[in-house]
Length: 253
Image (cartoon, rainbow, N blue to C red; front, side):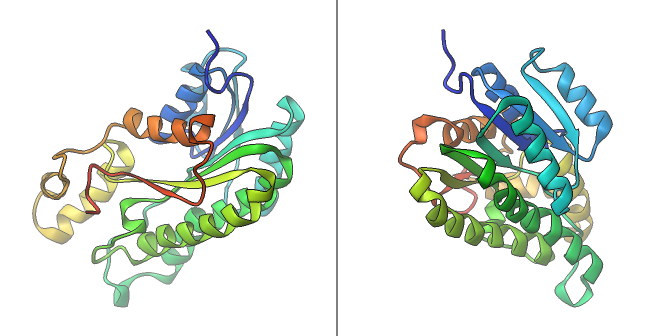
């Protein structure tokens, strides 16, 4: 039976992380060929072992670097032809501090990966994409809300939505859809690192606190959010562009 991404060429950045890998696995399950991009060599090696042979390859790249972005795009096109799905997922969380104490270098680093990384992915990726393709960017529930202490992360994730809306209008004549997936807390290492800082800031268990403000009462599993990504990647979302798909258990409501 054919998969819903049969024969399609996909790029996933932040592919060594839980959402990136879960999405790459679903893409491959549905017949796609996937270029995994990350800075974590060991994570990429481990990720490749979980994917079907011949369906995936990997490349080390800093998504905030223009030359390295152009390189992962051109390597993908050289190997498999035009790109059908570009999932710009790489992200960093920064630190939890009030704006008056927030380190400038950390702010710059968060914006570089979370926002500039997706800008560069679009800038260099679009010329290598097939008409009718799909671009997905990972924002966050704090792309539409915020909390104290996360000025860089929230600003970057809000910025992604503005970037997505602009590129959606620019790419529409080529029938390339551009959307954001906005997860709430996912039960993964990235989130656990955020919550350890948040626990110190709040003086209470951040994981339990977050569960209490999520209407569905729990963190997401990466595999659940990957299903939302797959929907946006596939023709099942053929008339969806410029949208923010909330995958946050109702946390933003």
